[in-house]
Image 1 (cartoon, rainbow, N blue to C red):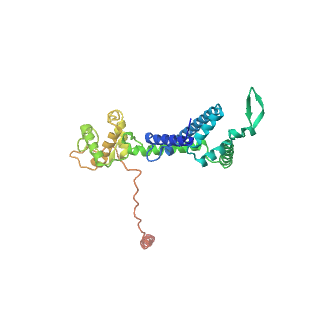
Image 2: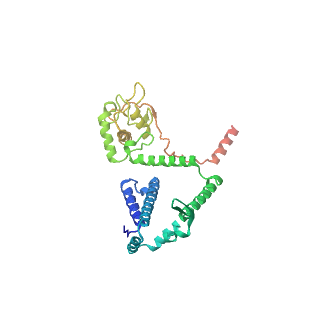
Image 3: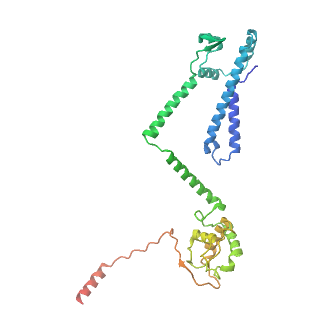
Length: 319
């Protein structure tokens, strides 16, 4: 029954073991899992509480076993236990937090009444429990002032903030996850690999109607500035995805091409096809499309010639 290792040492070892395994297996990006996922903090707290409960149960079993020994065996046990290394400061703090008296001094707090040989000790509340009770009072006061008097954020606002933050994270993720691109998040690809991939897709699926140089055949001319359903990466992507005009337009390619492939071929059209001079260009269809987000060019101001104005007015008056 000799136990030379302090109980708290096992708690520390198990805590850091669980912490290390959690950080190893949970993918939290650049941040630690305990920061990225706050629920892990409660998990570690539960582990610590469980380990402390196990340690207290083992100590209780040890005390019961000790009391069942005869006096000679108790002396031998205490002598053997005292030879082991002990953290005196930690043990002293632990005993102070428990607030219990040693078994030798239990006679000072034992009550007079007994039942069938069972007697009761008049122990006070453990200091750790009292301190936690005081902490809950302080927490409650701070909560009351912050949320009910100062009217800080409520659950609805916190939910809206978290949803907005999640949407921003999803938006940033979609910028790098090309397979998740849609008409709202699509952006013009300028990377050579994407443009070359778009060229292959165009030559495989689009030349039958638009010709290899984009001059148009059954489909409209793609080299001019006229667009039937609008230009720009979002409109072109949407046209490729959903198809052209009902009854006479292009088929919807969303069932055939992946989102990233539709973005690649749309980017190829806007970067390599538009502006070219085809061999047999088809007549323009649709309207000239101007990017609404493009900066508007300001016209230079023309200075007025006040002398000329006066002369003209004089001439009119004479006539």
